Length: 261
Ligand code: PLP
Image 1 (tube, rainbow, N blue to C red):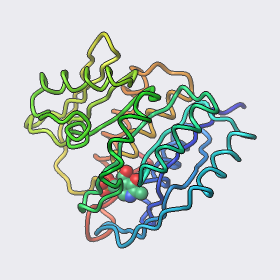
Image 2: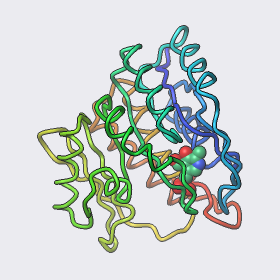
Image 3: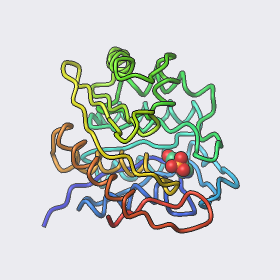
Image 4: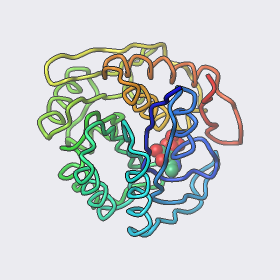
């Protein structure tokens, strides 16, 4: 049997709930062979990030080249990219290998408040990587940082999605999890022409560590299998909803979402 392959370019979470670990587990759950290129190692558990240890640019480039040379991926996902040099490198590699199914999870800050992307790198993300993205998956604070406007209402989010599309993202998924819509969570997909809303029941829990990584990884896996972005987001939404519903409640802090869900 032939399996689709996907590559994640992201940071390691020693706690296993987010980052590379969440991505690979999610790929596996959805029947996709996962490969990885590490940008940084984090010492982390459910209580927070204890330390961040970036890889050298050479190490990152070598990992990407090794995968590209022998195991070309059908889709790639980027997560924690740490600084503008890494963003520049990833953008150069995406162009070199002509990768056009690139899902960008614009990771900026961990739940505990620790920075996973240096502030100066936000501009590089917008200028260099966003125009190469097939899908970008900001949560509300990330969308605000990317477009410089409030995204509290659905109308604001539609405007923000249009702005991100104008900056070069072919599909924009603005996740509503940080919103204040009461019992509903509304994720918004914009494909440049139409908006699709994906609604779910809000689940009250603090155990949501790694939800963003898992959601974007599920979208990437489905795209690697040849699904349309709309179908991929639909499957990913169901996957993440089940993952939060059956949360593991590990650890003293924000427990990980359940990748078996
Ligand atoms: N650690 C790494 C390596 C990550 O990539 C991410 C998110 O993308 C996080 C931590 C943050 O996870 P959360 O904000 O869900 O706790």
